[in-house]
Length: 83
Image (cartoon, rainbow, N blue to C red; front, side, top):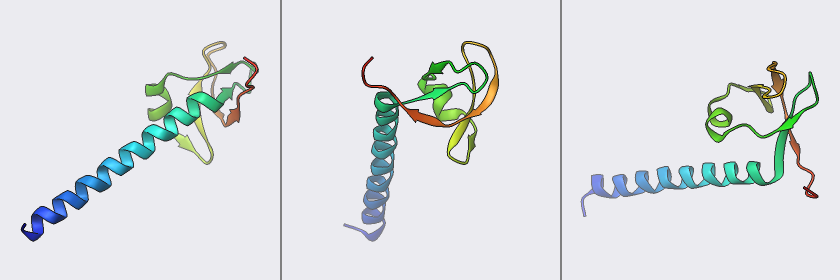
């Protein structure tokens, strides 16, 4: 095996690992966390695409509430497991 082939295999492995970790984080979020609108206190989980591509701000995201339409900074909160 040539050196560049080995580097390509290592690089591909790193990319695959990063993708698997991102998928694990998304699954964890959808199981255990939600966002609560600061304007109307409506708890919700955004669609995956909106969650992934929303602008990040410190520990939260800037999202639009599906209930009142407010575009606010929101931090994820642990979901109540009784539902």
